[in-house]
Length: 118
Image (tube, rainbow, N blue to C red):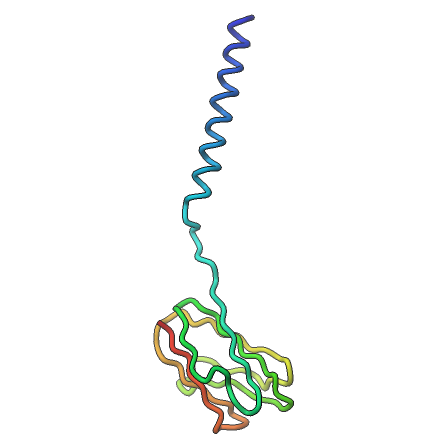
């Protein structure tokens, strides 16, 4: 009986030790998926702010219309196109590849902006 108790205690100690190692290892291991990156462009007073935004690849950019009138966000090169955004509506697009992405408002073509993805 004494041998059985000793084996059980040893098994419990080893199991607890492995669980502790597993927990410690998970705290130091990088996650398989990087955290998503987000950025915002405000549409207000007939302008995009910031007019030029530089972000790392993998960033999702969200435009928010804070103006009293409708606007759109349209890529000059056709990469993305929003619907007409009324006040407080949003449009998001993930920028996964490096490059320069100029855009404008199709309702007010003098409104222009650019996303630079590194």
